[in-house]
Length: 316
Length: 291
Image 1 (cartoon, rainbow over the protein chains, first blue to last red):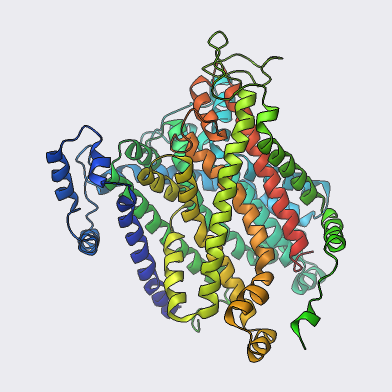
Image 2: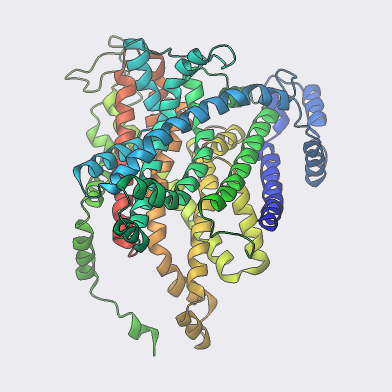
């Protein structure tokens, strides 16, 4: 196990290096002069020269990258061109809000999806199975921002059950926090729930067909023990994988949903930075999010060993 | 034994119908195919179907008008016909997604074939790049790229193609690896088959099924991604209609004129649903491991 961990962590180095190279290259994808793109058309030659100097754009590309990387390794992501705050502090302020929303949304979708998928597999080829699959299919086909708009229309504007916008931190009030995040979490959660339901169903169907399940049945295990103790635990690996992968999807989807519900998380910060052409912040955000995503994948790999003790990784 | 003897081509039309008959047993796939065909036809014949011009037919006496006989889906903030905009939006959204998928699949296939077949240093190089690119959440990465490129239809295609290419490269590499060790590939090598011939004539055809399934799935993702980008104001520039930017327009009139938001959303939902059904049908039909 520990040698697996060491190997797995070492394998992250080239990935993170590629990620940082891609992030670094983003400002060089700007057609024309990046300094002009950041300052807008009113900038004079002197300001442009200053900006190029500040961004180190006069150096050869490789030197620029080395400098950028060494700053990065010291935890310096630069500072915002608009507010002069450091990129890291901007992200650190907003990240908890986004994570709060994502975790809430993930919880909702898992609570809906796993039971739905299990029922669907256990009642394979019945009306119940068909109905859950239709629900799941609709879930993965609705764009989350459209779901958000409809939820606001119905539950906030017409019924007044939930607030349409805003965010209250857990530290102020847990109830208000949940109230404010319910609609955004559901809008984000529909697609997740659809995907997880489908994966749970197919993975459970695979497991339920296996010989040992028949043996367990023959030994007289109750349906509950059979499904939850013997089948679901073994069906968890693909489900966990898809949940892990979807975390990345949520980190992307939250941008649109945060902007609709005016939640001041990473997504809003990203949109504002794109509109302000605040490239250091844009680079910082996608770097941090990609790094989080890479570590989630690592965590998912480690979780496998719990759900399938056969996977020891010592030889691999 | 010549390779021709192994794969004697049947009469194309009869084998096509046999395939179709087999495929039509999967009802959901057929429903998906019907939905997608209808939407493609709508996109192609948009100028004939749309009763008004989506951009120029401005009518200041009927701003944000409710659905009526003259305007089935109502009108928007400039009095433009939403029905016509949704029809033309199909054309724009489908075109963008289709070209995106074609582009990323083509580049991804070449990268995957090279990486899987030749192995060694080139494989490590390509796979490191693929791993790196796949570490970004797709939509977030596309937004960052659009921030650099600037918003235009060409740039959306470019950004989404950069995001999706690695997924295709990884899929094809996996497929190549599983096939290249098979005995018949060795015997073709012994008989003097060139690498190019082996790659394109003997390996790639075996990867067509997973490729088709993945292309259908990613077509749906591309539709959603384009809509999200346009909805954020980073995608298709106004006044050209795309499903996403009609929604973007409608967002501020949600309370009084909900039809501006409802209809393009339904269009996106139905298209993505059709693609998902088609993808599921194809998977059932092409993947012999499933029943």
